[in-house]
Length: 532
Image 1: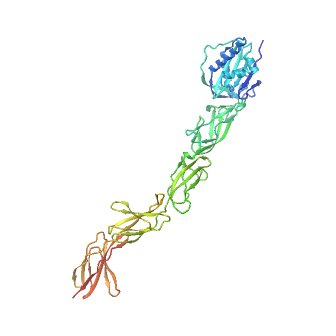
Image 2: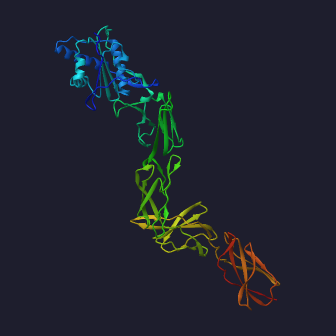
Image 3: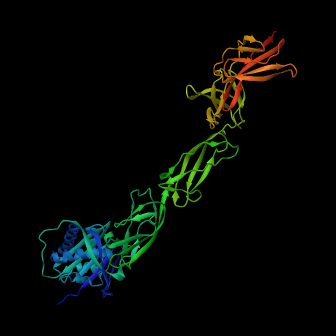
């Protein structure tokens, strides 16, 4: 008597018995998908032990593991991951897996042999198959896909092909034929990816939905897919489905089956960044204005410069008076997170318009425009011999007399303002250096060398550093000393003088600096009379 073939299934997640009718193949178009599973032979044999324990308890003979049925059951267990049904993924009956099969039990979601057997034995139909009097052989399939387990029992009556040695558990790639109409691709990865989460790239997961078990799916092997990305300036994807970032932004990813490119899935993905992973440039010192200052900030992500009020916004604090101010940087758009400890200095304004108020042989007086809201100014003098600026002193006024300088010597002066805040000095920018010089010393030791007819020659002590000397004679009519002439040497001859006339002469040295003449003090007056 030919036995009626029986198919029964149970699935843990809904905890009900499924009686699924065998359906005919809807289409002859099929696709082969690669599914990576682990054949769990040890669990399969544990199920066999429990089956035979239940049978012998009621006086039935033990079932023997048939290799042909076991191989078919392992294949069927893999198929359940793609399509949980007694109809195979390719649309044919479960009994096409093996001509020896006369009954099938299937289950999914049960984590152990004991657990799945309990589920089957609590179902009348499944129990009937397990305790079937006419069955003599069995093939048990047990596979693990990720964290899920799939189970199959195929029951036979005769023609046993005994298993000589229990196979070891092994990972395999199961090539499963599935109807094209049963393939529905789905993007099962994150739609928003922060680069910091996966600094070395992000693995895309494309799955095919299990139409026999709602909500379950299988990852499609990358070897079965072709990938394409809409915006390569943001990201790229390799043949293994790994996205690598070039920048933040939005991309459109398409994944399609190599075998049937018309079967595809498209997904928009945002590649996002975090402020903590960007480069935030130091903020340069900001000049005090009496108002809240809001310096811009340069933030870069790789080669990209972030845009204010698009990628981030700024919140300032303590940003009016001299001292330490702070700014909080808050991510926007494609950037998340914040940076709260960015600080900068508010300092006095730059000292401007230094001028020489006066100078003599050993001092120079400098003044400048007053700077608002400062404590004082520090003055620095450049020594051309030492080739460096040296600190001279400070003043609370916008002028200073620099003393104890060498005569006829050039210097350079610069000034910077500062503000004391809680014991800390905050300095403004140095002024532009002003070039200055001291004047020559007073001409001394002026003497008449000789008088000849209507001329007189006089000399004096040479002044170090002087460019030359200018000679002045008193005009009794104008009652003023008037310029007579100049000499590069410490002597001069004055001609065309009148006899029996008294003359008064005085001399001063000068130094030419920056196309300007700087004069020393006048000598004492030399009185000369030309006699007959």
